[in-house]
Image 1 (cartoon, one colour):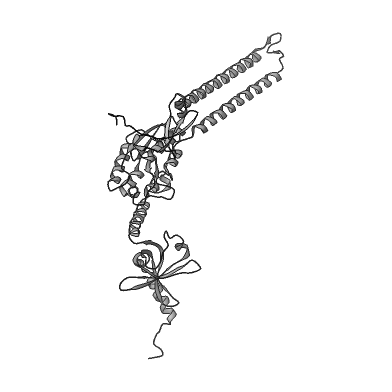
Image 2: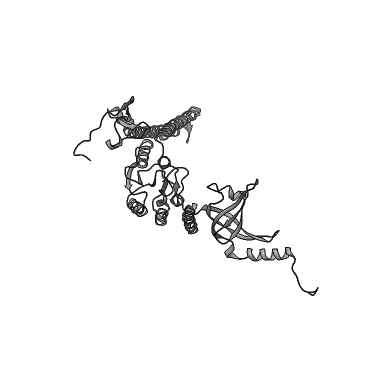
Length: 406
C-alpha cells in the first residue's frame, strides 16, 4: 500500500455517510412498522429501543419531547408504526431512526390515515383561522344536525330556550354513527343550508373513537368548511377532537357548550337594558341641569339695535330652544322605556317558568334528564316532577301507554 494513497479517517467516513443519508429526501419522513424490543427508558425521558420483524432489526431513539406525547404506555412486544427520519450516529457509525411519532398498529393505521387526511385538508386551507366567522349571539333561528330524539338534541334545545327563548330551533335529524352516517350527515347539513338560519350546530354526544369516525369523513369535513352559514362543531366531550372541529367556525367541547356559544344569556340582556336605561336617564338629567344652569347665568337685560327701540328676541329664542330640547329628550326617554318594557314582557312571556305557573310541570329521572316518553321509564324507577314552587320525588308503580297514539 502506497503512503501517498488517499484515505478516510473513521470519523470523516462516518460524517460523509451521515451527510449522504441526511441529504436523501426519502429517508427524512417515512413510516416503518415493526415490533418494539429492548426498550430502555432513560432518566432523561429519552426512549431507546429496537424495531424488528422476522428477518431484520433497526435501532431507534425517541427523544423526551416526543416521548412525552405518546398516547399509550409503550412496552416490549408492541407492534407499532413509527414516523421519523433515518440518520447515522457518527460516534459509532450506526444508523438508526429518530422517531417523532408512534402509534399501535391497527389503531395506528387508522390514525395514520386520519393524520394524512388532516395534513391534506390543512394544506388546502380548510382549517385556516382567516376563514372562521364570528357568530350572531342574538339569533332568530338556529339549526341542529344530530340524531333524532337524542340526549344531545334535547340538551341543546333546552339550553338554547333557557338562555335565549326568542330563538327558533330547527332540528335536521341524521345518523351520527355507522357506515351510512357520513352521507346522511352531509344530506342533513345541505338541507339546513336551504333555510334562513343564523347558526348551524352539528354534533353528538361522546363515544368511542369508532363511534365518532363519521365526523372525520372527508366529504363531511368539506361540506362543513363550505357552509354559507356559520357552523359550530359539538362532537363528543372535551377530549374528543374530530376533523369537523378544525373545519367549523367554532368548536364546542360539549353540546351544552355549543348552546351557550351560540346564544346570549337573556339574564345578561336584561341586566344590560337596565343599566342602559339608568345611564340614559342620568345623561338626560345631567344635560337638562346644564341647560338650566346656563339659562340662570344669562342676565335678562334689554339691549338696543336702534336708540329708543328695545328687543327681547334673543331671550325668547333661547327659551324656545330650551323647551324644545327638554321635550325631545323626554320623548326619547319615554320611547326607550317603552321599548325596554315591551322586550322584558316578551322575554317574560317566553320564560319556561311562566309555563309552570299555569299549572304545567315536567318530569326528569334521578339524574335530571328530561323524560319525554313512556318508553324512557320503568317500574320502580325514581322520578322527579318539577312544579312552579318545588319538586316532587316519586317512584313509578306502573305505566300504561295511550292506545292509538305514537
